[in-house]
Image (cartoon, rainbow, N blue to C red):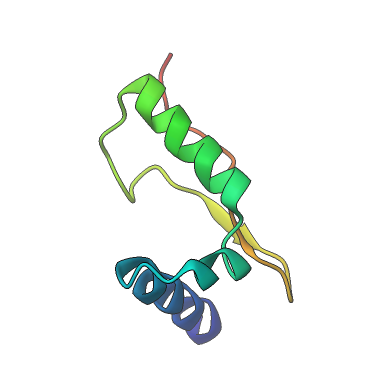
Length: 70
């Protein structure tokens, strides 16, 4: 738990500081796909409807998209 918590906190800090190195830690395509799905569906529950995963040694990925009652 500590590992992933620290990893997400590091990403959060980079995003807040507009540090472009964030894309070394976060998958841009899955992030864009997730944000686009939220916009299209009008979802407002930031943080409540997000699944993410990370393989050992890999980036953090958003997905799968879920809970958008279409």
